[in-house]
Length: 309
Image 1 (cartoon, rainbow, N blue to C red):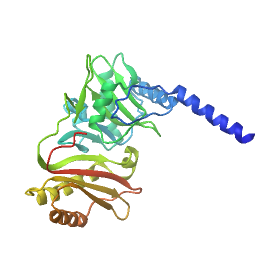
Image 2: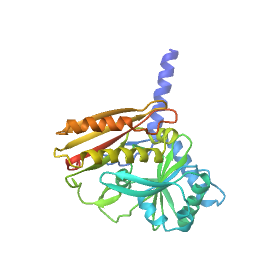
Image 3: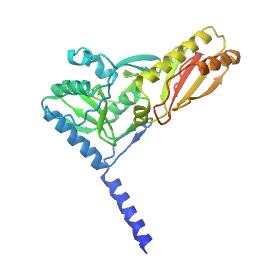
């Protein structure tokens, strides 16, 4: 009887959670994970407090990424541009897109001060719509976990992505506004179709396989960027004159003591060159994880078009 009551209690709690969660329209290709309604509401209150009180910075932490669309404006603002460290390059599909990352809480406060000044006046805090999710998904390489909120003003729609556990802001960006009709984005830019790109030999895509929380706790943007740079240099040097075509997937699992690397190939990759590639990559002295393992994958194309799936 006691077990039955416990089970009924759990079912009731789950039902309440399902009832409270505000569901939104999520595009089919986007992975979006809901959190508790109370957590979202608490994040909203923290945003309001930090926007309305010039001495309040409870959302701030040492690391904050400014996404590529917002960075096109913020890079020209003196207070933000004066932040020396934290140059970020987002390797998205065929392009390298610039952004910014603060690495000190005082720098994060400077960024928040600029945001607070821009938002000054009436604003609305809400969940993202389909258009904003499509844009954000085109920029990031990880699943979207709530709380993800939009601060909507007359001129701008700011994207605020929080770490669920402590409700600290980890990503700040801006979604383009639209008047009507669905839009599609690629590399943070509006497109009318998914291009297959040019038939060429280069890095096609970076896929983050660990959560943003794990990446933040155990690695850094600088370390991963360094790995991408060194591996890509080896790839270009070996495959630039290859006559064959195909795809190479290099999956990294960064560990505290010894990294693990798995290689996969697709189509007609030159196996002799591939052997040299594996040997040289295995000889590189690459950064390791700080504590727990983190995973990501590099996808290279050789005399091939982009995957358009």
